[in-house]
Length: 395
Image 1: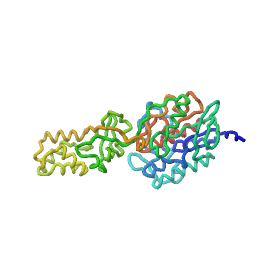
Image 2: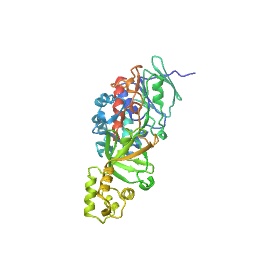
Image 3: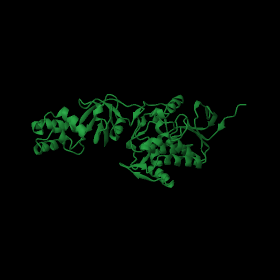
Image 4: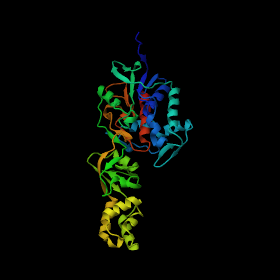
């Protein structure tokens, strides 16, 4: 005999940061909530974030630090459930944390503490969580009906919280986009975000020769720039400055790198030429740059065995380039290495207050699935917490 569908007040698909936050908030508001996860565990991305310590929010959350087709869309949710609110939750659970740099908050211990906290809050809200549950069909006729590999479930509210396309080996799919399109919502172009970049060689030295070299730099693309650490890889560039600018880079654009932030490179090189005329150019450059990078740049751009043999004009031209080095980008490392997905469900089709679809009441889209992408440094987690909480208020 066929079992009748189980009914809930809300069904949340995706037990990541946004999905768990929405489920626990709605559950604690007295709603009967079902949380579905197609893998065998919750919070997979939380567990690997921040080197396993989870950069769970940032002290300096502001709408201008999010990329979206509508820069103001995130304002409502972020202002109604703030970083202070989430920090208070973390403190209530006795989780020790610290500020690393630039307002970034990390657990002192493991990211598992954040997942355990969210699970405990879900239990407090009597949220029913089902693992290894695959949704095979969704229909809507006054309420949502989901066919799954574990039976049929129904609810007047459905929340899409399955994230984007980044890190497919962890189970990332375009599920939320597909469902959104099925119900008439638009989806913007999606691209890898917060991702390492593949570049043309800076010099005649192959990428591998510089792999592992790190330094502080100012990296810019268009009007956007970031001053943070940069890392050379076997394929190009990575590190916080590169991940940040990758969210603004588009195919065909070059990026610009200032290898000597805060330094007048022309004055520095000419002064050193006067003071250390017999020194090798690479030795002088090594005072301002990592040794391997200094060697590579000197070999390609400062010919001569001694500083005395290099004209001031050559030093000046090189210094200008060092402060504004145009780097050809051939591609990004793709979704496999991307921390987030740029783009997603179009904000024009969602309420900024509730994340509910304008054309289909009861359908909500939250977290990474929405066309809202934060900077590196806890911003995307805060968007997950805020958007999940905001949707839960309307369920």
